[in-house]
Structures are given as C-alpha cells and as structure tokens.
Length: 269
Image 1 (cartoon, rainbow, N blue to C red):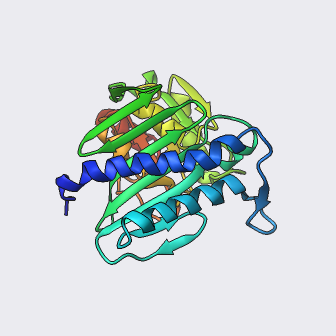
Image 2 (tube, one colour):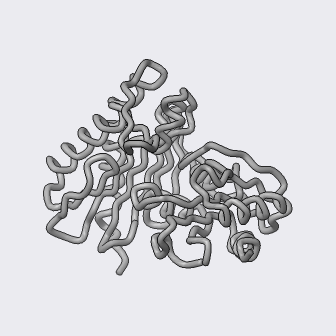
Image 3 (cartoon, rainbow, N blue to C red):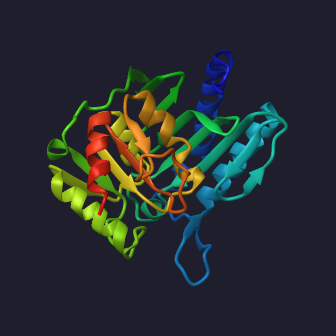
C-alpha cells in the first residue's frame, strides 16, 4: 500500500531536521579524534561516539514529535511503534571512511510505511550535500541551492561507471560474489571503490551508473531505494528481486532499466 501523500512533505521536512541533528554530533568529531570502539569482538567492526550520539539525538527528536512512530537504528536496535510508520536510521554509514578522514561517509534516514521505504535521505555533512527523495522526486541540495536529481541515462555496461565499497573476497563479498563483481566491472568503462552509501547518491546525481554490494542490513539500504528510484534508477538484489529478499544483503543499483538488466545478466556465473 502506498503512503498517504499528504503526510510526506511534513515528514520530509522532519527528515531534514533529523539530518541537521545528526550533523551536530558528527561533523565536529570528523577528523578531530572521535572515540572509536570495536563492537564485534574478534572481528573489526568499528563504531564511534559520533555514530552513537547522532542516533541518540535522532531518537529523542522522533520520540518528542512522533511518539507513535517506530524506530530501527544501527546502534540501538528497534523500538516498535503503534502505527504504520517507522524511521530507519544509520547515523554514520561508512564508519571506516569516517575514522580514516575520508568524506564518503553519510547519514542515512528512511521512513517506512507498512514496511516499505517511502522516503529516503542521504546526507554528507562535510561536503554539505544532501539528497532527499519522496513522492517520486529526488532533490539535491548544497550551499542553500537545490536542484532535481536525474540518473545519467546510460543504458550500456560498456559505457558505465561502476562502484562497490570493497571488491575483494576478504571484504564484504564471498568468493563467488567477488568473481561476479570482477566480471561485471571488467565489462564496464571505469570502476571506483570505497564510497559506501555515497556511491548511491552519486548514481542519483548522474555521476555513477552502477553500484553493486552485498552484506547490507536494512539500515544500510532503506534510505537508498527511494533516492535511486526517484532519480530514475533501478535498485534490486542480485536476482532482480526487491531489496531484503535474500540472506546476503545484496544490492544492485543502475541508472536505467536497460543497464540494470545487462548487469543482472553479468551476475549469472
């Protein structure tokens, strides 16, 4: 069921406030000695005080304005709501980029209606860039100026710019997935790496054409789908099914349906 349109502008304005609230916790810590913790025992899965404090502020804002809304966040889990709306928060997507001083991390905010993302926001505070999508429109803002986003329109893989965060089997891919990405990237014009959610924002802006990843959780992808789709792109898992309908956290985003279909064909190895 689609979300009631009359609420989306209100929630879009509130998502901007949530992003601003997160900026108040992340930006001053970036490149300035943020405290880093490992939350995965023997495996390195970093989290910073910026992640935690940003999500804490966002949760407080939601509870104050929309106490019946549910919340799912990377750092503090799920709080069930009393209605069809749920906010999905990833305060610092790309924590490894954050702790390395690379401005490709982003704050991700999604709003779901009856389990489906209907609003997505990607915010990069350091570069002052923001992508907000709902109601079939994606708007890019920077420095107080706004413009509508549109994907590149590229339809052939041989002309495409492709990205993934880590192309190696020792990263987020297993051996089969790494081989599938390598095959697809070899057929593309150029490949770039280590962009995390920022890659999907660049795809929506027409600067990249294909993004492939696995090992994503709901807080990683819920905000991405509305942004990519509202800009004219296509995003599914690696079999063409909706995001979340696999156990590997797959995502394949492309600028056009034709390009998406060609990339899907490359993945059949």
